[in-house]
Length: 77
Image 1 (cartoon, helix red, strand yellow):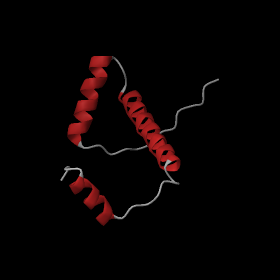
Image 2 (image 1 turned 180 degrees about the horizontal axis):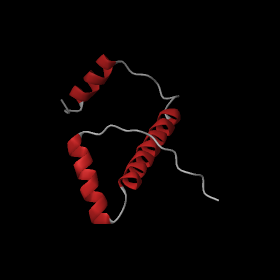
Image 3 (image 1 turned 60 degrees about the horizontal axis):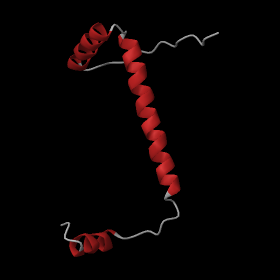
C-alpha cells in the first residue's frame, strides 16, 4: 500500500508557476509530480555532494594563498 501524499503550500514565482503549468500540460503530468521530481533530484545531488565531502575529509588542507600560488604557477590565473 502506497504512503498517502502530504500537502504543502509552496509559493512560486509567477513565471516559474506558468512554466510549470505549461510543462505539466505538454508532458501530461501534474505540477505536483514535476515539483516532486525536481525536489528528489535536488536532494540526490545534495547526498552526492555530502558523500564527496566525506570522501575528501582526510585530504590535506591548503590555504587560499597557497592555492593562488599553485594556480599562478600552472598558468590558470
